[in-house]
Image 1: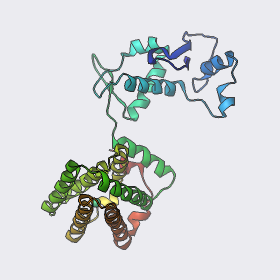
Image 2: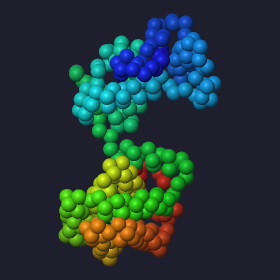
Image 3: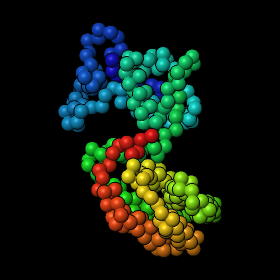
Image 4: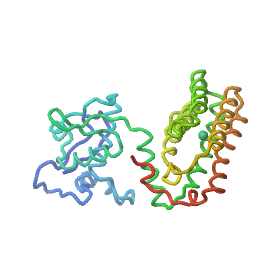
Length: 294
Ligand SMILES: [Zn+2]
């Protein structure tokens, strides 16, 4: 079963054109023939010929529509979506297509499926871990190395340092200062130290005033692969990291973008140089999807 998509209100925009078993319009393997046939019937060229690209599967079109409904109705995490039986009627699709659409959204972190009586699809809050997973998957199949990930971090985070120096609020600065103080206080507790280290980078990205960059930086910080997790992080390393954070913080506090950019560049470049010297294999290791999935 399939439908065609039109603009208009969310509830009315998915128009089923073949919603009965034994319909004369067959679905292709993508579930698209009916949608294409509807376009042909209206006198337009078939979708595939016009775009020279394979049209999206019906389940993907339906998933897009469900996302539009979530945002247009301003649903928040924890809100329930329309029950399955009502969606089947509303969208005129088969159960298999609806479940495929919901599964697709579940993998992206947009919904979660609640089981049991009164269960069903519930709005979820996707975060940087979902972005990290997608990035890692792409990087792995393209044969990217960890060195390339670090270079990307350097490009992004140095730019953000300049923005943070211009835009950080007093609250942002207090949060960054708290991170640096905690890093100093727990210099002998490696797990707590590294956690605070990551928190500094997240807060610093947020201080840039661009929420998308925060998401991206957090996503890239998931790429702490197994080799890195086994690094000794000597006391000298930890003091060096803390010093670099303190310098970045000072530049942000002084509202000095050039100094903030320089401090962050030195920080990431120093870390890369340290790996080159002591653990070169960590840099040339091809990215694995498992690094960024939990
Ligand atoms: Zn750092």
